[in-house]
Picture 1 (cartoon, rainbow, N blue to C red):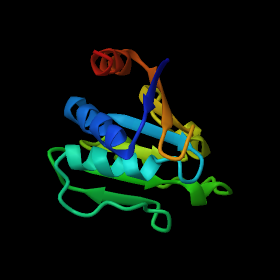
Picture 2 (cartoon, rainbow, N blue to C red):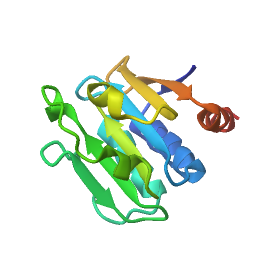
Picture 3 (spheres, rainbow, N blue to C red):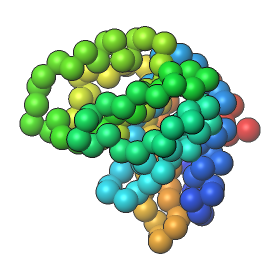
Picture 4 (cartoon, helix red, strand yellow):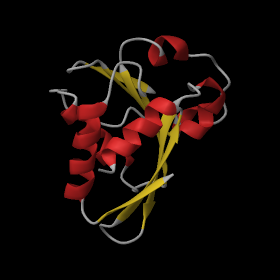
Length: 149
């Protein structure tokens, strides 16, 4: 487990850009945090780092939005699936050629790849956030080691 304090939106964006440069096809990042913690801000910067040109916004009502960049990018917000057990074709999303970011991932825990980077975001002030990175699998352990250099 790794912890990083972000003192501003700029810090969060810089971190997301650094992470984006290390990502490969089929990488999955899960995000947890209260409303307003910064999940979508982080995701927008990550998408920018992946070369996505379109405006990225939360797919709350559509569940999944897909974008083209250096790598295809899937942005999932599964908040609305809290009461659902429907299979929405997760394997095609997670095991294709895209990078996937899943907000509120605990709601589809059973459908997520076992290996992934889990990120928890906590508000500790008006602009300050604590990011907790939990790598699951060797690929993500190595990725976190590289990020912490």
